Image (cartoon, rainbow, N blue to C red; front, side):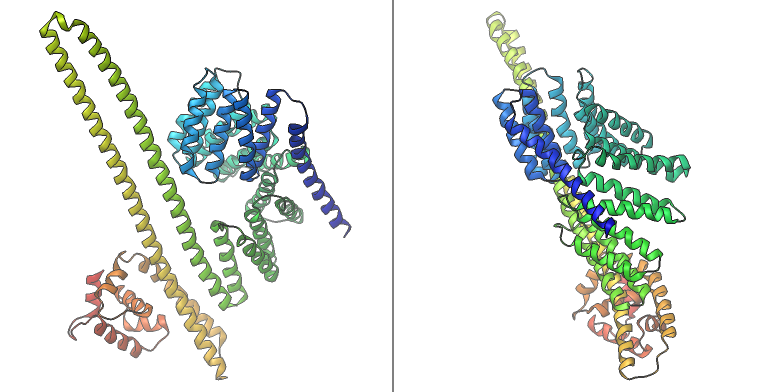
Length: 606
């Protein structure tokens, strides 16, 4: 009880410190007489703090005040920053269709003076936008341009950190370990220059992540030590500088440490267990004070369940996993990647406990959440594809306008020269007319090329949408395969229930052996079922003269795969006679002659 009071006191003090730091900035902004530069700096700190805590409404509110004040003092650098910050917030909210006006506004504002830092901020926003759309090559082009501009100035460590952090993320995505290390270290360097402790904590976490990729290749102790040391540095900043590191950043760092110990320690000694529990406890405590804590809490509880399972305390593991599931359901939208892992662990746990009903229930949830995740990803991808198309269209329009403007200038010059020399030579006038006609033909050709480019872009978008439809069909086939398996499980449970009701003696071990054999048999055929031609089941229903049930489709799939009557009867736990009757009934549903071979007919459909 004494220790519990100490933990609560500690967490209370950390929360108080964080609130105190933020409140001090707000009070200073409101009450003290500040220089223009000091006031602008305070606005930037508050915007970044609330954005890092995922409090986007507050971040937008302070950014609006920041923009108004910057306009009142006619500071084009600050105005450019405000447009850039708002564009980043919209990217974080995945509102990609609203970002383009802020890119244009930042570019226009930065062009009003010869400030290289303002131009660097204007280039950073499209870099961040393209990074959010997974257009990494285009993003890198803008990032390098922005860095090149900053090299001609005294520098801006806050911006340089963000530039290097995106480059770190890009090269990590491309599995370029050398550049991942390079830019992670540059992030640390710039965060130390700026004094921003939240950025510094993120930079140490980035370097630790780079070392994980290296350790998995080298398996060297020094790499593992680097992972743990940098992760601990990231976490310790939270307490060394109260209020200056967000709870979200701290919780992620602590969860990472616990995860690394679980993943890379072959033997969990009491000391290592103590470290894991301490880091998970810290992450859970910090998550109480962040905007969207569900994913972090679920990750912590999942690791606690892992420990309990290792101790063979399945009841405790079940408690943690159910708590994680309940927490994730309170988030909108649900973070399906973690949810799928949690319900998968629950399905395995219930199977270990011998609770087959619950195991089947959670296996069904795995299927449901997998479909939901696919649909969510599909919706996000469509938004990104639309934004990419609009961005490309906008770029083409700008290029076209620039070409037209240049063409009109050239035509104007030619017209002026022609007017001046018109009276001197009819031959010159004729030559000038021919030149104008050539220029007009060039303009027409360029307009036709522009239309062709837009048509090609639309065709590419259509092809990508068709690819998404094919992926959906693939997932539907996998769902059907899983449904077949689940239906078989339901049949086993029903038969077991009927035997219990008749009070007949039951050999549980024999039933489990038979079920294990059936599972193995099903797993061999599951992959084959999933690989059936994508239009197989649709074609079945189109060719049938009567409606096909799910069981009918199952028989058709097994027959298509070449299984004989005995195999199907064994897999479905029915009598061979029942299989023969079903084959006869299927012939009737397809309106086949008695002489027609059903298997050959189904293979013809495939």
